[in-house]
Length: 365
Image (tube, rainbow, N blue to C red):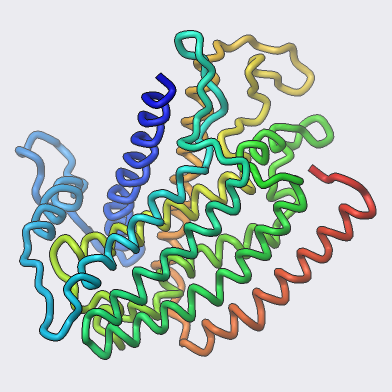
C-alpha cells in the first residue's frame, strides 16, 4: 500500500509539472500578444462549440501534434546517440526537481496520514540544488553533439551562464537554511505558518527580501529566458544549442524551459511565500485576529492549502512571463557582470548579515 501511495504522489507531481508547463505555452503566447497589442492565438476552435475562442486548441493540441509528428532530423557528422540523449537530460532534471517540493501538509485518508509531497526528503534543498545543476549537461551535450558551430557556441554560453548564476543562487539558499535552521522544505513551510505581532504571516520574504530577489533572478537565468536568453539568442545563434533539433526533440527542449519556469515558481513559493500556507487558516480552522476560531473540515483545509499553493505557483509563472516580454536581452558581458560583480557580492553579504543576526538575536523564524 505504501508503494501505491508513493507511486500515485509521484505521478501526480509529474502530471502537475507537465500540465503547468504546457499551460505556460498558452500563457506565453497570449501574454506576449496582450503586451504587444496583438490578438495572439485565436484559431482552431474545438469543434466550433465555444463562443469565445482563446486559442487553447491550436496552442495546446494542434501545435504539439504538429511538432511531435515532424521529421526527427539528425545532421551529418552529429553524434546520434548523444544527440538523442540530450533532450532527455535537459527535461528529466527539471521534472524530478519538483519531487521534493511540498504542495500541501498532511491529509488523512482511510485512516492513513499522507504527506502531500512526492518524496519525503529531509535534505530537500540539497536535492533541489543537485538536480538543478544537472540541467547543464543537456545543454552542453546538445551543442557538442550537433556538429554545428552556432549550437556549440550556444551550449558554451549556456554552461557559463548556468554555472555563474548557480553560485549566487546557492549562497541565497544558504541564507534561507540559516534562517529556518533546517534543510527540509516541509519544515520550512510549517515554520512560515507562524504570525508576527499576531497578524503578519511570518513568510520567508519578510526576513529575506534579498534572498528572494537573488533566487528569483538566478532562477530565471537558469531557465535561459529573456533577459537571460543568451544561449538561445535567435538574432545571433539561430536557436542556440538546439539549432539542429526538430520534432519531438525540439519540443522536449521547449518543454524543459517551461518546466524550469514552474520549478522556479515552486521554489520561490516554498521558501518565501508560505508554500501551501494560508494566513489564519490551520488544521483547527480559520482564526482571524481578534475573533473566535471558525471550525473548518480538515479535508477542506487540506484542499484549500493545495489550491493556495497552485495559485501562488501560477502567479510567479505569470510574473516570469511578464518579465520575459518586458525586459530586453542582456549582452553577454552585462549578463556575466550581473552574476559575478553584482549578485555574488550581494549574496555573500546577505549570508554574513543573516548569520550575524542569528548569532546576536538567536533564531529568527
